[in-house]
Every structure is written in structure tokens, then in C-alpha cells.
Image (cartoon, rainbow, N blue to C red; front, side, top):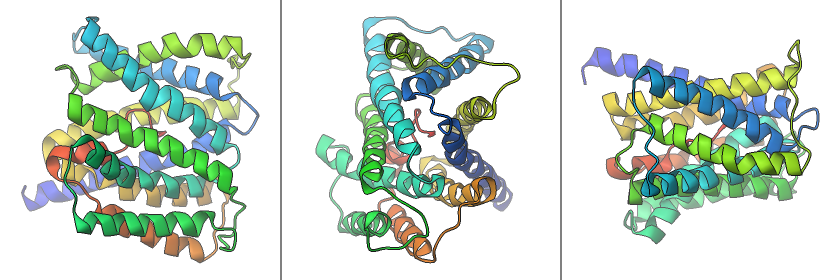
Length: 309
């Protein structure tokens, strides 16, 4: 890449990170009035399916409905959205948005462990040290004796980490078994539609349907904006991978975490003790050391379901 291209792509990376980072405080606002997690996931998938369907329609790209494609949609809908986002929204009720931004940085570390288990990658001491730094960062966040200036329930932090584990598995699944020749927009569209098939009965059976109101309430507006931002930022990520390469694009993880803390402070007035910056440094070192090779970079990036979301 030329110097001008590097500067342009770097600026694009910052904008993407700012977009993904703002979804953390928006999620916190969305869950602030007691909306059920299934109802929130339902509307998130409706918005995602509508936008991805429109993009596929404009591109005149059909949605394959053969058995292998349907299996792909089902697996990615479950491990990339329905299960992790249901956990994510529940944990978001109790966790500060800035802490969620820190914990989401464990996705690349989980992804490396899963990659080893699936044979997607080989053991490296450097990346083991990255896992150790990531663990130090997590312990600094959840240890009761550590003062971060915020109330952090360790149990719900654990639930949030489980959702991060699912996001990491999603990327590894795609890396190992592929997408049946479909492009990311088709995959997101198909997974969103399949996810709706699953989440609709759960939403109504549990009485968690969120009825739209006009004028739109702040929590509903936060959910809409966060879902739209996620779809467009993910599409931008796909574009950046094609132009600048996956290893360059995966550095958005740093931006998401950093901007998540900044937006949480600006929007929610979250204030952190100095210890949180030690945890942030440990997480950044961990992400740097576990940074994957180009062919496995997808496994360590924010997933299709992360608000990422």
C-alpha cells in the first residue's frame, strides 16, 4: 500500500472502531427500561434482515436455500446471534458499558484457543503469553479486591465472557468450514432470517415482545441506532478486509475497546478508577500477541452477531 492508502485505511479503521464502540453504551440504554432479551434480539434481527435484504436486492444477489446453506444459516444464527446476544443483553443490565467494552476484547484470545482445538492454527509461545496478559486483564476487572470505580458483578461478567466465547467460535467455524461460496451479505441475510424463525416463538412464548411506540422512546431508539450502526460497520469491515487485508483490519478490535470506554464516559458519564487503564493495557498487549495470521484473521474479529453489538 502507498502512504496515502495507509493513511486513508487507518482513518477508516478509526471511524469503524468509533462506530462499533458506541454500540456498547447504546446497548446499555436499550436494556435500561426492562425490555426482555428475546424481544431485543428479535428487533435487532428484524433490522439486520431488512438492511441485508435490501443490500442483496440492490446487488441482485439471490439468497440460496439449499440444505448446506440452510445449515450454515442455522449454525451462525445460533452461535453468532441468538445465544450470545441473549446472554449479552441480560449481562448488559448489570454491567457498566465501559466494562463490556473491555471484556469484548477477549474475543481474539478465545478465538486462538478454539482455533487450536479445531486445528485452524498451531501453538505459539507468543500467543500463549497473549492469553496470559488477557487473563490478567480479566482478573483485574472481576477481582473483588480491585477498585475500578464501578460496581462489577463477577457472575454477570462471566456471562458476558460466555457470549464472547460464542462470538469467537463463530469466526472459527467460518474459517474451518467456509460459507458455501456465499458472500458476507448473503450469509448475514440468511442468518438473520433463520434467527428470526428461532427467536419469534421464544419472544412471544415468554411475553418479551417489545411493542414499537411513537414518538420513539430513547431505549428503542438506542436499539435501532445500535443495530443499524452494527450492520453498516460490519459491511465496512468486509470492504476493508478486501482492500487492506485481514491482519490490518483486525486491528479494529483495539479501536472498539478504546472508543467503547470513551463513548461510555461521554454518553453515560461512567467514571473509572486508574486501575481500569492497567486492565486496558493488559488487554491491548494480549490482543497484540494473539493477533492471527492472515488466513485465520476472521476468527479473531468482531463477529456478525456482536454489538457487537
